Length: 273
Image 1 (spheres, rainbow, N blue to C red):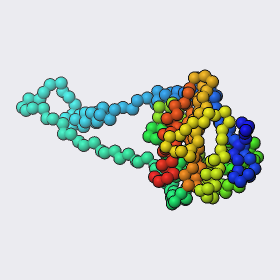
Image 2: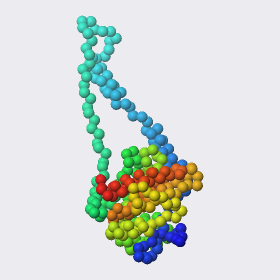
Image 3: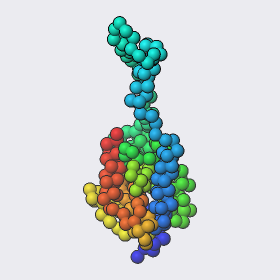
Image 4: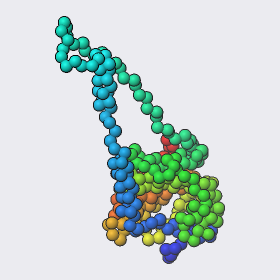
């Protein structure tokens, strides 16, 4: 029986790599992390204040035009005819610059992914807030090694599987109740990606099914207290890419959150944009 500290096992009896250690499992981050970010956003909103309504600005502009056209008021109507009405002057139109879009490009052909691997990261939902670059971040081998126990062994394991590159992106959902991270690792072949995923395991996590993907492996990490952060982790592959999705929420995690995120990541890798 494997011990909790064992990691990814290389194919064909290659050197055993340490298992992935969950980052921040059962740590009270909900109040100090997720809620702190929400509180900070609220403070910014209060400090900035509410902008004046465009309708009120338009009324003020028309009043100014009327004053310039009719002159100062004398307090009584002029005899000999009705008071002339102000001539409305159209306000200049305002053209808002479009928000900059991503310029990343990627291709997928028969399970082989090309271009910028960040293009295939789990899309950020409307209203969600990404951490760091909205396009995601490229990971070095040292970055990956820091995510595994006994990191000195993972580098040789990655080499044995023909590791090519890795990227990740993390975002906070619009309601501020969850943080989702996706990590993609591209390998030399589809078989290598699948072999690496098959050898991945997580200490202290309880295995769960991931609906819609019979080859995926899921794990749930329930917190010791409801005030602490729970975690869901899913691992699977599409072609030459192994992907891992992590969902952090306060209290016991809803497994449906992982199933939804895994499906969206799988679709992105399968079909692109």
